[in-house]
Image (cartoon, rainbow, N blue to C red; front, side, top):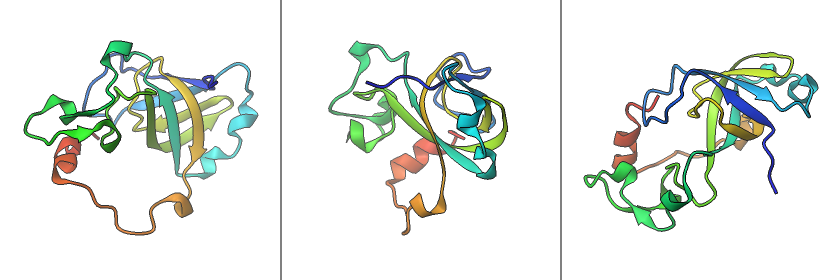
Length: 149
């Protein structure tokens, strides 16, 4: 069983598809953790945030294929071949820029999660965990992401 370790604090109250790049968020650790849990994370330029899409309703969960963002101009692809929020386990993962740490608060930029989102894990980004070869993706994915950040 997973339990949130933190909560997202930011000015974004409504789920939107684009313009996440300038969003500054504070990830506030749960009171069961001290600031020591984040000690030295500011020495990394980026962190990966794993979070729970807590507002996705059960009846909105996708298990098969669909058009990303319901755009019929894009091909129908499986839920595991896209990054939509209506996933079976409602998990999101985003690499963010680490701005600073203050005790039990982590300030980040580019987290695509709204205010109040439960955070399940925080991991530093290490070069060795990034792809060692060229990253390829279909044209529809590039088009979908053009205004995301």
